[in-house]
Image 1 (cartoon, rainbow, N blue to C red):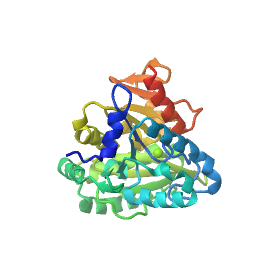
Image 2: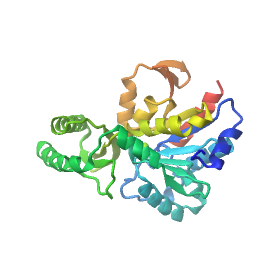
Image 3: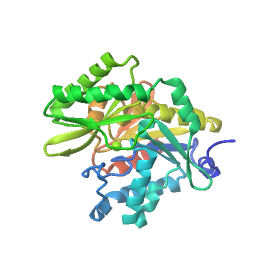
Image 4: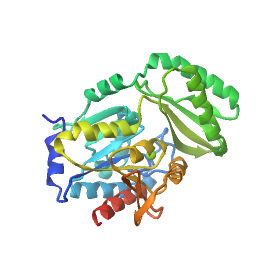
Length: 325
Ligand SMILES: [Mg+2]
């Protein structure tokens, strides 16, 4: 029996297009545009309501076209649930924005699937898959990370380098640092070198821009067994496998989205107003133009959104344009 709810399967079956489509979307500044506030403080302001309307419009577009929505976030399930409760208490009329079908959290290290009772249940098979595929020994890595912070602070005295304040996540160790933008690549390179000389097995280090303040940029740095691409591929190959071919779109705006946008069997949508680390990465790719905003890259298709729309609008535009070929 499929672990997907009948409601989810019915959505896929009832789409009117040749092949059913599914959207995997990053959350912050992709599906829900905030751009100015610090996501760590969750300062949602009533006067920002207009910013969230494109997300509501995208949600309605997906519902009307029966396209399932899978959120793929750096946040974990606990954090997204907390944000949902703050958001819906401020904007009760926008609460459907948080109506997802599947939630992939903690940069691709957890998958939660909505069941028939509208409750999310963690996919335990995915945890077993990660644990058996990658060796990520948190207990051994953590003391190395403590040493890393001391070393980085000495090497870059003007930067602030620390653990992110959050509950412990089994398959993720997260840092944040504040630095001037010209120093970022040097700092990240030093972190890589430190890990290469301190631990035997290499693990992905994922950089994402967080926010700006006092002339300094704040970045997230996640040490994880795998990135968002693994979780997206797992959902496509293992959870959708019984369903046959599905057209998958992935949408993102930042560094932690790069792997799912460009390394999965999906049409990658680089949304409008994407962060510099993603925009700069895209510039290094040899993209071949296909038609307006669509490019091919190593036998896959991607869509680079113009900056004239909001991120959620650019996702809808990309899906509509794709089916109007
Ligand atoms: Mg984002």
